[in-house]
Length: 380
Image (cartoon, rainbow, N blue to C red; front, side):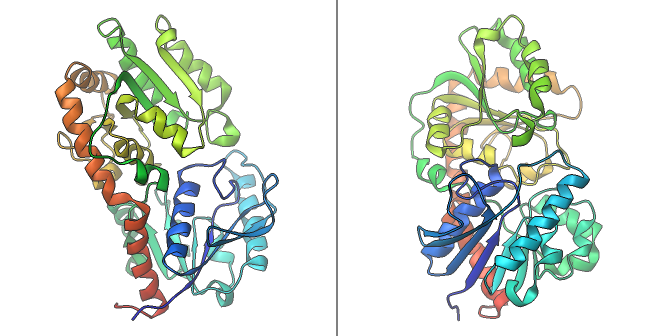
């Protein structure tokens, strides 16, 4: 038997909800909050105070509590101390719940159990042994099988708490999934942070190598490069732009776009989407590729294990070996797609069908079933 639950969602300390500025984590948690509320549950999201957002409000059935916090510093001691201070503040303001979901590093250690209820940790990055410290948590929700395996290998003492629930795309992208791809431009797109671990230099080198043979193709990169927004800064952007010498007019760095509908309009024009991440221990699932797949792009991804939850090479995308001869391997995959419209069409259609598995409604259903088990109101 199931019943309405009181669910807290404690997002990290640096980005606001709704996610007018933020990364995939904030968008995903907000989408889940909306789905939980739609299903009749009492949902409270606790996030950072930001701009003119009220400290407390109820919007679209979701209660919001916003507490003072900070813009993100570089990862390090200051970053962790800010997270601790934020978690203390959250613990003071949060309401009593059956289940509290959080992606904050320190919150599972700090939040009072008498108010949090069962703590469910969203494991959205490759673990570094820290999961062993989360014995107060009732559940460790791994974003992919790869992450789940890593948690259990590193911290066997919490293996029984691990449960795989893939990440969801946002509502905008779920609604963008169609049965036909529609007309496409000769455009290659990237969506994500402009940082070294994303392998953007590999993509630029591959594009430049093919540019003279495919003069009507262009490359568009969407995402923030500022350090405060998750990028690697102006210096890294300058390095990347230097790689485009001779084809500068065909490569665009458009910066971050936070409105999902605007991103969709870009991706629906693109014929190919490339996500060349080399972050072996930085990626957990890959929401951006699935969002591009929802828009019908034919995807090319690096061979990270976490992408195996949604990409099967030659069936709904292409996969290139990023560990050796990455530039050459990516260029080879790009060349195949750039010269084969039928292959782009087949992979793009299959990609859209795959994306249907990761809509907020589908993922929220799986999460709620697990919350009911944690609260003792569902099948074990």
